Amino acid sequence: MVCMDIITGGVTAAKGFQAASTAAGIKYQGRADMAMVFSEVPAVSAGTFTRNVVKAAPVKWDREVVETERCAQAVVINAGIANAGTGAEGMAYCKRTAETGGSLLDISARQVLVASTGVIGMQLPMEKLEAGIREMAPNLSGSLESGHQASCAIMTTDTKPKEVAVIFEVDGKMVTVGGMCKGSGMIHPNMCTMLSFVTTDIAISKELLQEALREDVEDTYNMVSVDGDTSTNDTVLLLANGMAGNTEIREKDGNYRKFQEALHYVNAALARKIAADGEGATALFEAKVIHADTKEHAKVLAKSVVSSSLSKAAIYGHDSNWGRFLCAMGYSGVEFDPEAVELFFQSKAGRIQIYKDGVSTDYSEEEAARILSEDEVTFLADMKMGDEKAVAWGCDLTYDYVKINADYRS
Image (cartoon, rainbow, N blue to C red; front, side, top):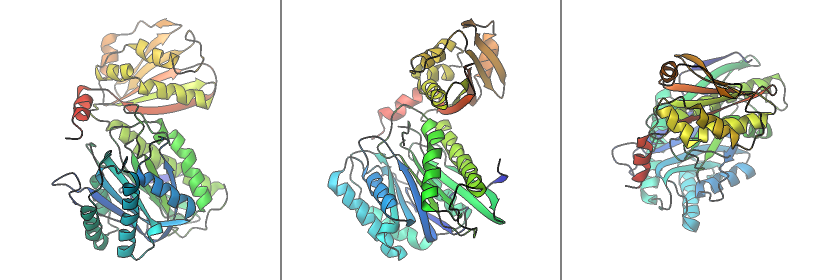
């Protein structure tokens, strides 16, 4: 295990990263709705993107830039309009955004990434967006507060900003990994609407940076499900500017593994924050599968449970109806022996076994309800089949989820 410290901050915690935000009036009134992240020097870039066949224009722009350019230096983000389902005009607006940002920051447009979140099918009001970029560029700051304000500006139906940062040592140099994300509804990533921006001052090759991100996404963001809908805009961007001063990581050595662990902590923390802030949610719903025969089976089982509407509704009602959870495991496609599985609920209020040897245990419904009444609840399935495990995160399903999504465009 790498020795790391959790520190205050987000995207500006690492050396050389700055941020700004502004109220451009793109859709929301009276609140910031645009953010910019900037690296003082070119940063090696990596990214993962939605697997939805319908991809937003910013996803197409970023994927092409990340794949063809070694470095990026800025990200321009807007909330309120997704720039998805907008055709050639939407793609042209990505280029125009990058060109505007590039000219103001004195960098190439090919070093500017873009991200959008919000309503699908609406064109961006480019005059407002470009005015927002002009407002932000001279106000970029490396302060923790500027990073925090940026995390607030990218929210849509989120109820709280989401950011985290850690620091650890490589080659006698202190390295920082920090990030911010947004996501509350349309969350079922397959790399929701989910956007995550992670920055680090570590020196690392582009190839290893991309590999580290691609592998870690599978065990973090892709293990989240709020509502089963995979967004057109899902994007995770990772920038590494090398300003920590360590010897560049070019192979999978101990330093690479240290970075992997730090990156995993940041991504997992952000993923949990997304799940906990699901639209209308009152509780983080975690599913842990242990002693599975394969890692993939463990992941499928855990994801099936947190994606189940009936299981999510049971969490909301503090109802220990274990049949719903076992049912979700049963239709996951993974073969297992229901007679051998053991099931538990746990939270900071305690732990209780609810199912063993194919039948319900003689548990107290009152104690189970008390355990399920906490704001973080875990369902644990012991498969008794092997040594593999996985964790997935979701949230409860409430009346407010329907209310929020019934009038999202109004």
